[in-house]
Image (cartoon, one colour):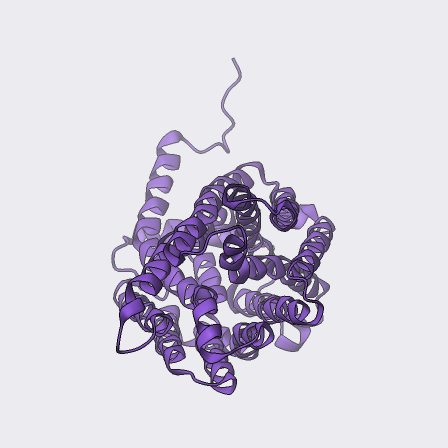
Length: 436
């Protein structure tokens, strides 16, 4: 019988470390997930308000698409500065500031009357939220080594489909139940009420978050040393410090930004237009649309958890990511081409959501596998800010093409082509770096 290699950790050490990271997960994830859920609800509730808002304010698809997308211009301009500030002042106060201010800005959408006001408030929401998602990804990289970060990120990532599973029926209920309100229109109530979770999440972040491992009083010194040693070993071959101007010259930063842009073209196309696609399949009741919208994101939740674990276990992150993008693009095209009833449409949208949202979580293993510290914070912010320009291009392009051609399918087909190009580009990433 062969002996066990001396480098293999004894079972007691493995279980002790697993329990430690489980404790960290239980402490950090609930409040981070709540904040992510609030972010997603406030980001896409404009899609649920679309029909009533356009009718009440006489907004064309082009006006709506520009307003929905201009959020990402503010997001883009302030993303890198926001993460630079987070690295200096600490995650607890800065993430709480982000969450509270975007909640206030989101509630202001209820009071817009003109296209100009709509553009301004959406821009301000983007400014307020800038830095949140990359800030959280960077924050997780200071608590979890790369071998455990896929699972940690997937827990935060399921907040995106959870936001729809919870938010879609609630949005439908608000639009349906407040139809008789004499105070203000249902779509205005939607923005006010769905801003409240962000305010609550901001307060909880201040209470439960720690800036780093050293300030975590709920961990013993032995626990802290164990995590710090894991991170030290994990960071040995990563880029620790590069000037900001040099980071913009790194081919990897631009390639990851391009791939993320292609992915988000598909994701935001799905998010903003899914209620309209379900209505097109023959569903007219707002509450029913909200309930059906929750189904694709339930499928995405399961897919995120499965792919996050299997990507960590097999170390085939690039293959998982590209495969998820290909699946999302094909299913999104299928949702447009089927032209069937609600069952076929929701099934196709479920596969599209599973693929695109899984890829959205998997991509963050790439930059954190190559960088650490403040460099990681800035690098993630650059990729996220450039990629999120798709949030402006996607709804605007679809809306503009709808108006110019009178064909509501052309814009979505264009998006599926872009997603496919991104999936192909991802296959060119060096496996020895991103799959380690």
